[in-house]
Length: 162
Image 1: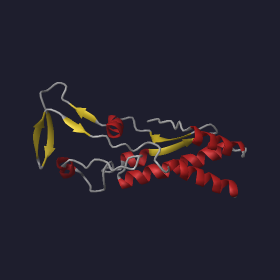
Image 2 (image 1 turned 90 degrees about the vertical axis):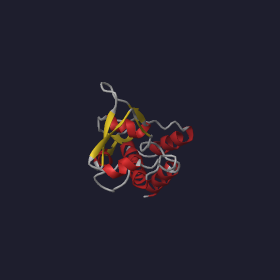
Image 3 (image 1 turned 60 degrees about the vertical axis):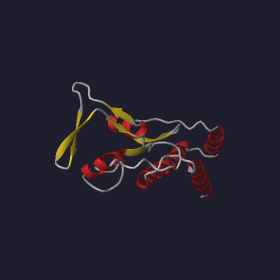
Image 4 (image 1 turned 180 degrees about the vertical axis):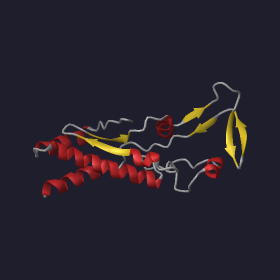
């Protein structure tokens, strides 16, 4: 699982204050996890990074080779369906349980080079073409977004008012 920590002291203090006002801290972390899960999936649908900027467009060859036109990182739906949350009394996590290089490549970007042959063969329009390397730009999908802290606070305040 890709793991990111939120190190904002103000946010951390607000969460600790909220958790201190309720006995069931697991519920507080479950709410946090659910908000972050929803926001993560929405950003994937909108093809945006956690900071709100747009992902780089797909290369024309990639577009031609796709099975569906469902959007970036959603061609098969495997990665999108794997995004989930884990919550306990101590923490909330949002991530993917896929153990595949594409998880890291999509989050951080990569340059793929052939290891045992002089070039890569890329399928294209029923044939193939050769490339010495392929660069896949980062398309971060896991992370705490600009408005996520405020949304978590707002949701927790609503929970405490019930």
